[in-house]
Image (cartoon, rainbow, N blue to C red; front, side, top):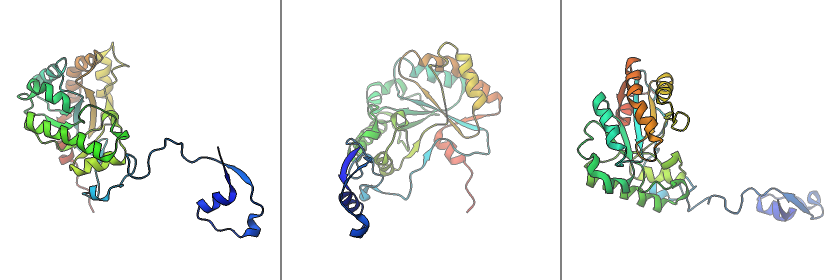
Length: 266
């Protein structure tokens, strides 16, 4: 609680009250609306449009899934490329002939592009930041620089131009949205995910969980980099894909999923 005078409180609120109604000025307890470390309301990472010059379009699409009348699903992998797992995930996807969208970390592309450069034919590459920092705590110029570096290394090393962006941890503030807008990115989250801790010793149950819960237009989150928990996803991948195909699902990239969504009637 913060102690302030009633007159100061009312003046700060832009209120005018007759002196008779106010009576004697005393000290009252009022709740502090923001802590000392509250997000900045302008010029920082929280404001949605603190830099009007950065606004390039009327909206940025934030997608958890895409409404679809067709049984289509987009499989996505975050955090790679990485030598331990990414080639093995690509092996399974190649065996099954299905595409995926890889949200890649810029510094990993810089180091390991050779692992994937000639294996991305059917797949899509999205921007997942330069070094997987929490962009929701960064200001607009810092996020733009981060995304610019990642965008450039994906173009230069992989010959792809990303049009999609996924913020690390799924965290984003207003300046993250503005930065995405400045690159013309759609901001992609997910509505289904691989639960590697819950199913760490039971990949069959992990596969079943996804097969049973996916809906038309789902975006499924998985990871192709990190510790040995990723083996749960890797071991579940074949059964998950074949199980969804048996349900009549078709696998597409996220951009293809968006392109296939029904156009709303005005």
